Image (cartoon, rainbow, N blue to C red; front, side):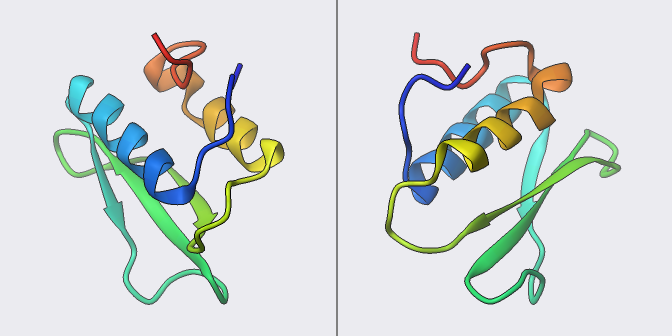
Length: 86
């Protein structure tokens, strides 16, 4: 369970860090997304898409709903509670 709200840059840095630890890559889809939202894909070592997520590209802290949905989307890949501070 997410234990604190994050800004988009901090969340993206966390997702990329955990992805690297699991031999995965996060790439932004250029030109994809709606208005201020950006679409990101999680790729495995062979470049195959494992999952995707979208998040706003603004400076405000993300809502709990967005954080929980991203955490739940990758819980199977990264393990439960992967977003918690250690």
